[in-house]
Length: 162
Ligand SMILES: [Fe+2]
Image 1 (cartoon, helix red, strand yellow):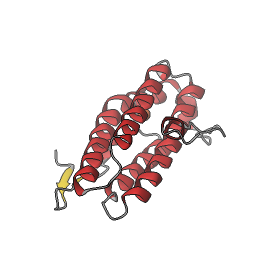
Image 2 (cartoon, rainbow, N blue to C red):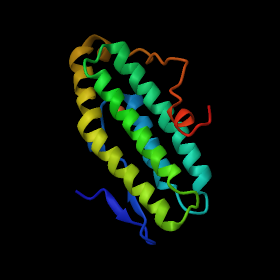
Image 3 (cartoon, rainbow, N blue to C red):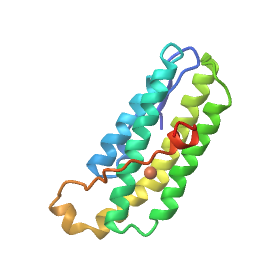
């Protein structure tokens, strides 16, 4: 398995691949975009890229959780806790320093890639499997995924922006 490549300067890049597929189009599309956002993190654009990334993490978690809740996924609460844990860990990292060095950017990208790969392969794929086993009628006749209007403001709350 070779999903990680070194771009040079110690950059650790992970590309989305077929093995990450949950089979739920919206979730997979959002996961792909998350990897792309992590990939574009570098020292020059760090703050802007981090802001954009966190905004999208919130969007993705909100959408994924709405789908889990509306489909009656039994592990919804446990999954929500994993998302909250990630938000806390990232917040802790962001509050631990203010200057973006190559090393710090590299550390964040490595952490996020590792988390994403582990989370998707273990927890999101499990949800994808459950979803198709339990919503066959919907899977055969897909309808737009209901998305709740309110968003989860973890990062704003944890970073004291609200
Ligand atoms: Fe998830």
